[in-house]
Amino acid sequence: MIEPSGKAVRIDAWLWAVRIFKTRSQAAEAVRAGHVKIGGKAVKPAVQVVPGDTVRVWKNHHEYILEVTATVSKRVGAPVARTCYIDHSPPPPPRELFAAPPVRDRGTGRPTKKERREIDRLMGRRD
Image (spheres, rainbow, N blue to C red):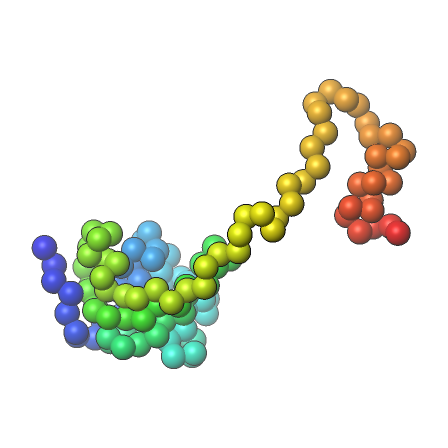
């Protein structure tokens, strides 16, 4: 088993090792695209991360705020990976806030004039 250490590790390798990204190339691409920030600054994939750093990751329309507690350069299991950072991310919004889109039964044909007006009002196309 690989023990977490306090040595400096590349940010792309650390993100991959603690299972934030599935592959190291995805982690490096996210860093290059500016989706990863250390201390509020966009960085390059070769930048070193050490315990105590704050890493912000934008992935799948969600921001992760991670405080590095241990560094690993090899990929580790999920239970060990969770011990390498403290997650300060805000909780996702509740699912009730998103209204389900209207559903038309299959085979009912084209919408009537009244239904079309309601759809346009819902989409914000007309008053």
